[in-house]
Image (cartoon, rainbow, N blue to C red; front, top):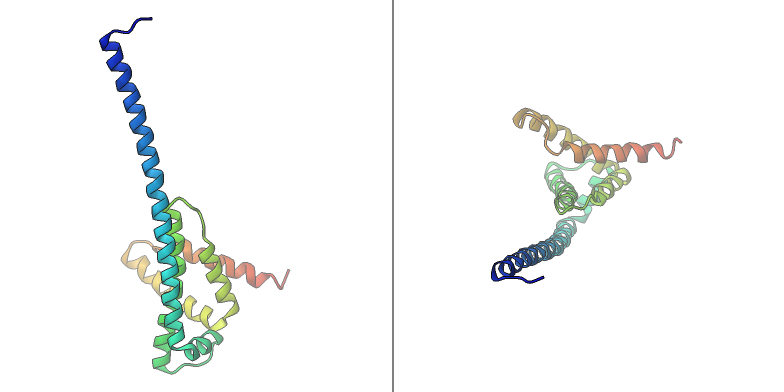
Length: 164
């Protein structure tokens, strides 16, 4: 079969298009890997920041987790320590999902932490209930409800372990 100039140019064009699509696919894959690595770095960095916040007031963290009564100033610090812990769990799960990984490990870990620490559980539940109520009003639906429900379902499963 003999190819003329026109056919040769058309074949070259098709090969070029296929080659560019392969290149774009490889580039997207590389960009996703970079995003995964960066998100991992930021998650670790957030965990270090969380540890630092807790380490500044370990006595408040321990008493709050145990459910002991806290002075008003200590309660503010404890609420912020717990808020940071919840935010890291929440956004780690969100980031994983956005990057195509259906991993809720951070939420499950947070639920097990709440299960082991009754003061943290009571504080988180109270704050979560208030947030969800306001979000339902202000956002015409509670944003983040799926994550809250996952943690609550985990807590129920953990609570039922001793009764089964």
